[in-house]
Image: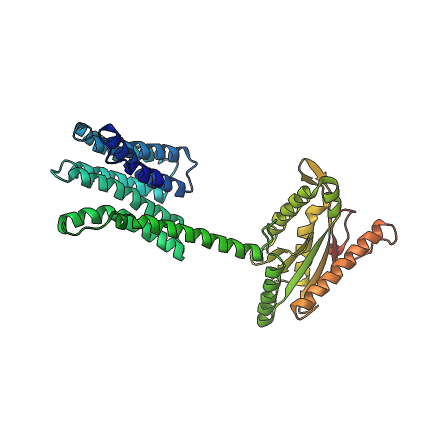
Amino acid sequence: MIVLHFGAYTFLQAPGFAGIASDILGTSALAWAGILFMWASVPYRGRVSSRWMLAALVTTNTFYIAVLSLAPAGHWLLKPAAVLIGTMPLAVSLWDIGNFKHPLRLTLVILYPSLSIFLLAIQDRPGNGLDLALNGVLFTVYMGCCIYFWYAYRRATAGAFITVLGFLVWANVFTVGPAMLTFFPNVHLENEVWNLPKYVVAVGMILILLEDQIEHNKYLALHDELTGLPNRRLFEDRLANALERARRSGSQAALLLIDLDRFKEVNDTMGHHAGDELLKHLGRLFVGRVRRTDTVARTGGDEFSVILEQPVSRSDALRVARTLTQPLEDPILLEGNTVRVGASVGIAVFPEDADDAEALSIAADLRMYASKREARSREDGCMPAPVLKDPLQATGSDAGPQLAE
């Protein structure tokens, strides 16, 4: 829209209708740019009332700008156009007010009726009334952009600050310009000076894109791209911190290593895409079954690790392990097919089993592999199922979880 604005304005001095059309198109494109930006900034733009609001703003602003460009021939339409520019957004808001209320919608309800009152008061002023009216329309559009962008990016970064400042200065170009003509008529500034806020906004938005990319890269460095869970690097950091907190408070912490059984069969029979979907499903399932203070991480291809922080005991760890793996005893529906996967779990408790993160991980790992070997031996008929005193340690079915503590 900004490119269209500059392109249309190159024909502003054309004679007759071509010049008028260039003026209407160039100015309208400047307003459309701001209105579309506001609409794109709202989280509720998919609502029907949001689309009606977009249509109302585009229509009324374009109509008013066209009437201004056609003046004095269309002077009689100025008052109806000024009334519409305030009443149509208000009407859309009132129509949907029973179902939807949002601070940004309230912003429009304040901005555009206020603009309508300003236009009715100023547009008939002799001399510069029409110019002030046009500046009022564009000021409202870009002040709206400033408010909407600030609401969408309420964060203390250089990109957000520069963009908000750019929109604020852009909006006030339409107030400072007329003020300078009135109070400092002999001071002349080149047109490019008034266009500088556009470039400030562009620079700010490029910075925001870079900031978002940097944050995304940081996230990928510490999280598994497939499941969104912490990866091994973040897991090791959180485990060290959890043990340090437990050491200071004299409490316990537990580490659970969950290794999926028969995962390779899923990949071989249904494809790697199905295996990925299974891992994402299990990641969501595990996260939903632990406390927010605990950590679920994906630390290997088909291996998940869980850190249980205080208050926790050995029996708590066994209970959580059973809670996490119980769903794996039943068939899982995956892309219209049912799959059966089991899990072997190794549990290590700090400080009873180990007094540092590396030793605790080794203890849990050894117990997990011992559980997996034991399960395979029973499946092959080489040994009977063991009799355990703790029912939480009892082994399940062929595809069920195996707990090793």
